[in-house]
Length: 212
Length: 68
Image (tube, rainbow over all chains, first blue to last red; front, top):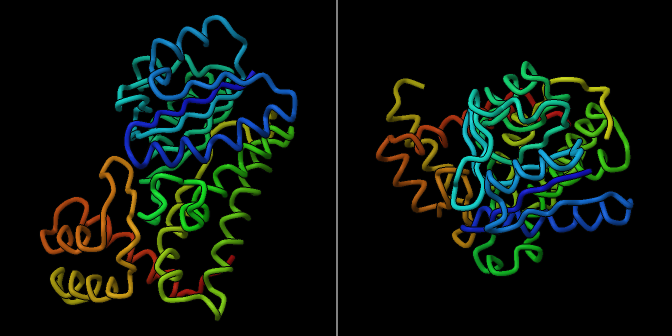
C-alpha cells in the first residue's frame, strides 16, 4: 500500500501537490492501493492513523522540511527525529522536501526503515509566476519536478530503490543536456545551476535493492 | 576570489540574465524574485549565502565540465 502527503498551503506546496497527481494516477493504473492525504489531511494524526491501520510499504512525503523533520499542512511536523522516526520502520520513504536526507534519513534507517530517498540540502525549483495558478502548465517547474516523479514511477513499476534513483538522476541529466544545447536561451540557462544543485543533493540511504 | 564582497558582486552580476518573470522556490525560505535574491546577497544573510554556495558549486561544475 502506498501513502502520499500533499499539503498545499503556499506556492511551493501548491506546485508539488499538483505535480504529484500524475504519481497517484500512475499508481492507480498499476492497480496499487493509494492513500492520498491532501491539504488539511496531510497532518501527523491522519498519517499515524493510517500507519497503524494499514500495511503501508511505500510513503511519499511532499512539503517543507529540515534536517530532522518532515512537515505537512501549514508546516506542522509529521515525522521528526528522534521523536517518532521509528514509525518509518519497514517502509520505503521518498521525501520531496528540503534537507531531510541529512539527518532524518540516516536516523530512519537506524530505526528500521527499509530505504530513505530525499535531499540532503535545500530542494529548489524555478517557476513562472504567470503559471502559478496552473502549475501543470509550467514547463520550467516541470524540469525540476519531473525527475522527482520519475523516481516514484520507477518504484511503482517494481524497480529497486537503486534503479529508481538512477532513473531519476538520468531524468535530471536529460533536462540538463537540453539546457546545455546550443539553442538554449540565456533565460533557460538560468535554470541550470538549480537543476545541477537538486541532482547533486538527491541521495538515498538504506537498502538499494529493496522493491515495492 | 580575494574577499567575500568581490564574490557577492560577481554573483549579483551573473544574476543579470536571470529572467524577471521567474521565481525561485528555496524550500523553507519561500519564493523569491531576482530582486529579492540580489537584496539577500547584498545583505549577506542566510539566503544570500545559500545562493552564493549554489553559484560557486555551479561555477565549479562549469570549470570541471558538466558531465551527464
